[in-house]
Amino acid sequence: MVSTSEFRNGLVIRLDGDLWTMVEFQHVKPGKGGAFVRTRLKNIKTQRVLDRTFRSGEKVDDVRLEKKSVQYLYRGEGEFVFMDMNSYEQISVGEAVVKESAKFLKEGIEADILFEGHNPLGVELPIFVELEITRTEPGFKGDTATGGSKPATLETGAVIQVPLFLEEGEKVKVDTRTGTYVERVK
Image (tube, rainbow, N blue to C red; front, side, top):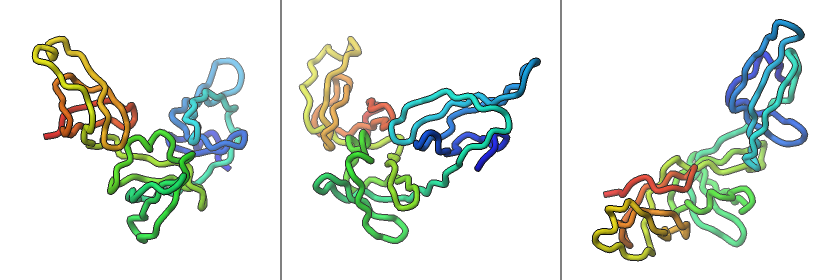
């Protein structure tokens, strides 16, 4: 149990049966009435954001999560297989846990898996990954002046918008949080 005086960013709590991570908090002491703590919480599974107010001194259940460094090996039937970087054991994680991260998983990429006990909760990819463009329409001379973009399919199957001057076979840096093109990799 954690009191409101012990709140901090990154704290994971159990609220209404779900796990939430504390994004931000603010202690408020109005001139009239009791003090309270205004928080912004993010659901670990659904990524939904919730604003919640707690009375000063109120206690909530805190949860200890373990983060393991892993390397992505391959995709099996309905699951993704990772290797623990410390013990070299293989960890199978279901598609429901990997969710949107699957679009940017390339064999050999290093990531982190969040665990509550032995249950995997989610996969955290690096902020940027470098992927090769496998299919895109050719750009035409003069098109780049407009600053337009075109869809490109990456080696993992993800489709993102890239500048018109990029061709098939080139590598690009992609932001995994937003799924957007960042720059061309030389």
